Length: 589
Image 1: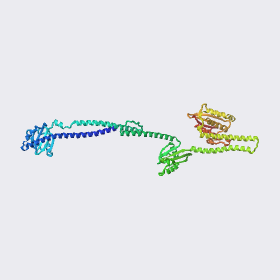
Image 2 (image 1 turned 135 degrees about the vertical axis):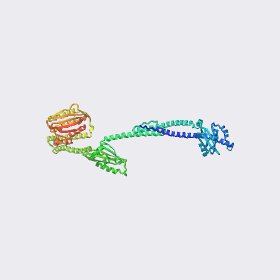
Image 3 (image 1 turned 120 degrees about the horizontal axis):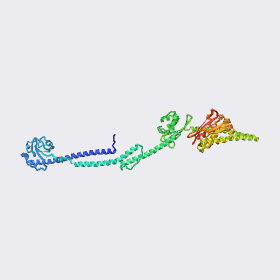
Image 4 (image 1 turned 60 degrees about the vertical axis):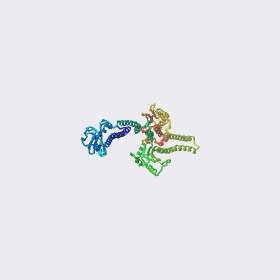
């Protein structure tokens, strides 16, 4: 496994390598310098001896007298022990040697290295083993006039030690190396504090974690930079998290809306939308739409596209105080949708789709209701007016006739009052259902109260009534509306089902949320072609008979709306053996 070096380790290593190279260079230079210095010092001593010898030869005319043996006189005076003096003529013949008695028998020295160097350069030196004495010497030869004067010193341990470089400098360099290495260690340690913290910060930042600020950065530029980076990151991280939370809230809010909403960039690329928007767009297109280009090609958005093309041109400026908007309604599969679009100041825009089917149908229903109410009001009002005109136009009339016409007018006024009350009740259920008082209602008791209310009429029509709802069958609801449900059903049975019938009310099932009720009678039933419409306002199976009985045509409409307000549903069917059965559910809470 590869082990990665730390930044501090790399810096320390680089510093050490550079310092080692520098140290080696200094040591090498100093070694050569000291070696040259000591060699020069030794050669200077030997040169002085050669010069003294030359002066002695010259002053004593030893060369003219060929009396070089007198050189022994000064060789004994030389302070350096083991110093050997040799005089060689230019042909290499040894004229004198202080260490050899029979120097005249010595071989020719012209090819000796130091002599050759002196012949070429004036002086020369060499360390070698003497073939004459079989000892190692440090030779120094110097050309003076017609001969060479060679001074040599025995190359023993003393001379070798003298020529060696002093180790004091090496120890000094090693000590200096240790001191500088320690300083580099401390410097890189201080430098690595900031680098390590920045590394830890980058790791945490990569994991999208909040970094706790520690005021332990070194007090230098790098420490200031590190501190500022962490502070800026933490502020950006907190801001980013806040924006993410707000975005999540926005998305949750958008998904909870009934409207379909989508936001687009100025390039008409979708940047954000809720699931309802995608659902409605796919409803328009009747296929899966997954690109912005395909969305805007749907024919329902033709007006939006034209609106965008007009306002998104390059030379068109957007007034932030009067943002361009468009709104229109389209229909699809018997549903109505309102499409809105608004362009923002940066030329991004949004499209909102709202399902207004319910509002449109309610508007149509209200128009129809208004028309039906006007029609229904005409009959009792015309009757009342007719009866009163008859009385006034034929006044005076007998008391019996007066009573007859007044009773008829009173009956029509009652019918008019019932109609107004029923219309008011339906409107209240639809528009202010939340305002009805809610409390715990015992359905068994409600059914009994309805029975007691119609007991006399049931007896006159020989109607048998059976309340099979168990006691304690309670729901959270409005007592008046629940009473009207069973009252309208019972009244319809009494008025239209015929005589000698039986009415049964029962709760045939329940679950965690609902009670399921059945209301049935054994009367004449309802023709099948009318079953689908009996819950419509003012719909009558037999209009003439209904008006004769005083019905408003709103009883079953009230029943359905009251059931729906209690979160239930209602249906109707004819029993095979005769009569009609209503099945409905009521929420427990």
